[in-house]
Length: 376
Ligand SMILES: [Zn+2]
Image (cartoon, rainbow, N blue to C red; front, side):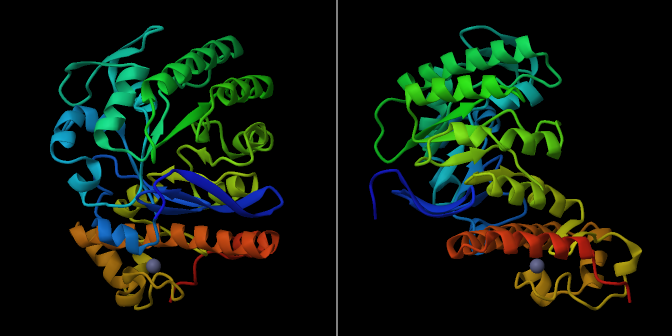
């Protein structure tokens, strides 16, 4: 197995790409969907079950882990992989986005951000240097630059100012990351929905040089149309030969649309969070398992799905355990959702490799438009 981090593009179809990221902890097939393991667990799932759904890589959250149980404690206990029993690649975010969305009493300066923990009100500081240190203590394979993501809506001046601060922080992140063979640092493009700012940001990042590049500041409430408009040009500013990661996306049709526009990696809490609220994603659209129509339905959620929820249980059972607040409900529905998302990724990888991605997309959209099977 390789001891270096590398990315190999295997095929393209239109703007869509398929390839392999190699790390000392294993390979990541792209396009890749990364389940989110916020607090060192993908909620309601054992790590071996997450792997069984087809996930090659997980995402961990710096903000949550630095507050509890702390990066220093995880380091003392052998690092995040050992701590959570996941020996394959892990990508960690920088903490920047979640400080902005979760923490209290934030103060932003050129140096970094000070804030109060949403858990116990304790005071903390995150800077590019501290974020790199935390992600190193966690043992993350793919480290993200510390950046600032302005709350939207924001005017152009604010977006430009924030983007330029993030580019200065990207340079400090690169310096603080140091020389760590086998580990990667990804830069994050900002610039909101402004084409010239996106280009300026990409140029600044390429000058610094990273092992991969993220498109940041999207999927923050701008809507799918605006996001796709930006993705129609933004990935083209990034190097062809490096992985491109769209942060925080998304619903199945967001994911497919992003891959069609040249994105290689994505992450989202949607499949796991929805699994716990009874929302199920299937090839025929969204099913709400709490609806009374499922109470007497002996059929599986999706007869073509090979996940445990669909292979071994009826809609009636899944409806019952959800209504009864049984833990197995979140477990089974999360498993199904993660399995379904990974199946989409596998379908896209195969279609891109065969040069049939357009036909695959047409079939995907046609099935979703069909809607759920008729009630009995
Ligand atoms: Zn299933």
